[in-house]
Image (cartoon, rainbow, N blue to C red; front, top):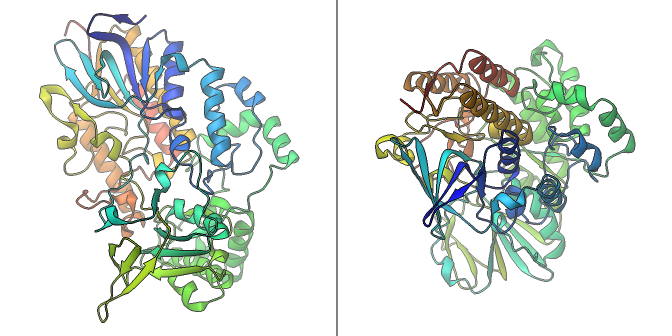
Amino acid sequence: MATATAQTTSVDAVIVGAGFAGMYMLHRLRGLGLAAQVFEAGSGVGGTWFWNRYPGARVDIRSLEYSFSFSPELEDEWRWSERYAPQAELLRYAEHVADRFDLRRNISLNTRVTAAHYDAAAQRWDVRTDDGTTVSARYVIMATGCLSVPTDVDFAGIADFAGRIYRTSQWPHEGVDFSGQRVGIIGTGSSAIQSIPIIAAQASQLTVFQRTPNYSVPAHNGPLAPEEVADWTANRTAYRAAIKLTPGGFFNEPRETLTFDEPPEAQIAELERRWAIGGFQILGAYADMGIDPVANKVTADFAAAKIRALVEDPAVADLLTPKDYPFATKRLCVDSNYYATFNRNNVRLVDLKATPIECITPAGIRTMTKDSGGEDFSFDAIVLATGFDAMTGALDRIDIRGRDGVRLKDRWAHGPQTYLGLMVAGFPNLFTITGPGSPSVLSNMLTSIEQHVDWIADCLDHLARHQQASIEASPEAEAAWVDHVNDIASQTLYPQANSWYMGANVPGKPRQFLPYAGGVGVYREHCDGIAARGYEGFVLQSAAA
């Protein structure tokens, strides 16, 4: 049980974040008899689905797969309404999980963790929050999310804009009605691609400011077919077991066939079949799509032809077609009527590579060109869909100090270094759920979250049964894992894109491929093998030590 003094509360574990990762971690720790406290900056649970309420926000993995598998009772009682659940339904699911397992009594909302310092003598962490609370914990588990900290926005004059400014990542909970308004949206990443069709249907005029076009595939979303639900329910156990061994933690019919093993007409037929299914199915078409640039171009050309067929204006279609990075080396987007939206009379596309933004004016946005004074746009509202400081952003913003007072941010000054994406050398008993160096954002996040949480829970159970007080990654194992992650990435086409996978969207952030590209199934085998060999590569210490 948690104990309290006049100044400091003592618990077994502090969990930072009350999204799906933090809630499941709390549930597992309770099952081990450990006292845990969750701190959440938001006013409600749900993490990503609490904050991201922008128009059109929905999951890009099938709802049946983007859900918890640890409780058959939970699966039996919850029914998804759509193939790709919208934000509101996902938030209701998160709230249901919190209530179903009585998690709220150990979750402190509206409370941001500001610091976590390790006391080597006590083998404990001192955790501080923004309301002045101090908690002593044996373990600290970061469930802070991979896409939870928006990038900084520093457009000149932004404070002078007379209208309203909205961020897709911090959308008003009461919603926004753009009816009759002139709206400008900056960015064409996933959030923008989902929201642009909705905003365009409301606004009198929508101007989309695009720096880099993204590939997007159709969701073909709709109500879940009864036969699909029936099949899933009847075969759920087998499906769940198989998902854990797939490359992405979801089903997309991955084939071992190489692109040029088949003639061109067969290639097109296979890509057409998968395009008609929608979502990430296209990623499973050919095994060499992500590693062979010539093979990749077959799919890229197919996607470009689809864009040309969907967008009536050839010049606009050309601007919407990526040209300087391979297909799916940036996060592939899943949309509903995104490309067709540019056929509307009230939608305009502005190429920021040709006419970059000079400043925000009181009336709107001013762009510039090399040969003229640019153009002034007048807006009632501006939407910033400018992305996230992915995977490391939330951790960098907490003052985390390990042994000898070393700051995690300094330790990662040249890029994050972890062992398995789970622990960092010199930071005992600090765990990162879906951290850099794990499949994380390349996978179904629910699959990867469950795998990490289960591994951490099993690890803590192992420590308790063997009277060990602390665990940390050895520097040698960490270095070897970082080399392995980089080696796997170098064998793919991912590093050829200036993506947030590489940290390229944040000025000054070290360029390093952040997730593990070896696949969920392969990664799970690594983790399970390391645990089976007595937590190989980790240093365990008793309290006496």
